[in-house]
Length: 194
Image 1 (cartoon, helix red, strand yellow):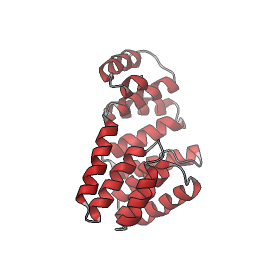
Image 2 (cartoon, one colour):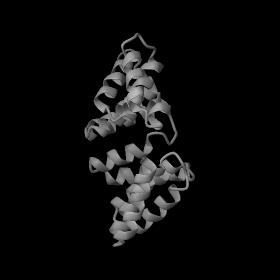
Image 3 (cartoon, helix red, strand yellow):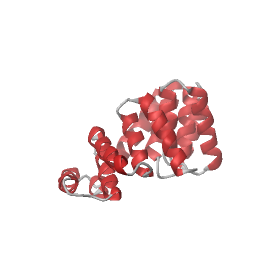
């Protein structure tokens, strides 16, 4: 289903997801359905799917992550932060979810914690684009646009969170007084998304 979404066949994916969601599903299947809804931007529907999984499988980590991401996307930042923290306690170390967690920390005003988490992520996973995006976002928040631009540029050479790095690079260039450069980065971001 996610492959259909990625190639622009969202309507077809939505029909499959709706049909599948009506049947009894395993926690793994329902979690995948939830992530399809996330990819479609249907965060409230996705949140319901993740909550259904967690109602009977409290420690199902990727449903925990999905719940945290949905809460953050729905601008429920104060609820998202502890949801991310519960996911990290259950899952253990890794970079997955770290970038969103850093953003949620910044959104609730915990900048020092966000910087610490972002620096730790980048130290543990120096080549991971999500770690670079997290640290670039933290540096931008600190007013260090030059460092944010450098980190974001490095992150565009990796794959998983490439679009977040293009966005942060554009924002950093804008903060540095280079609107033409920023526009070029935002255009690159739009070209990737289409």
